[in-house]
Length: 155
Image (cartoon, rainbow, N blue to C red; front, side, top):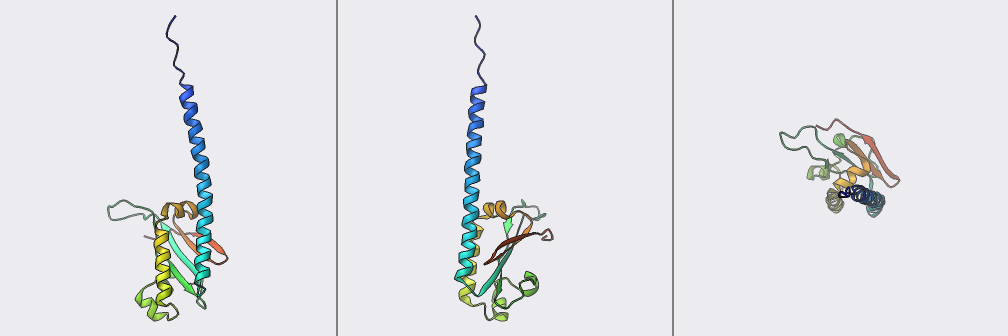
């Protein structure tokens, strides 16, 4: 009698089972992440009622001067009560800066600090935001919810 053939199916079956289990865990985490990010945006907007809309770009650049092209989230544009929510982020200077604060008196130092803090927190969630909203998009958040539009003119 010869040596019995090794049972390769058992380790592979175990590996497939582990992969399926991991997939379920990841799917559940993604659902929780989506809910938490949505809740965070709603809470932030509720806590600063002067802000009617937040808008940011998120994308992987096409070119980065020889460095690796890495997904990133752009600065958050802020639209206040009474401002044209459809106006371009660039055209209205919606980003937070000293110059912007001078041109937009309703944009107080306190609001700017809150936005910067929120923006900093979102920067730690780049993988989650990419999964949730996609790549090469503009994300627009209001009290009513979040919309996403394709955007490829970023470089």
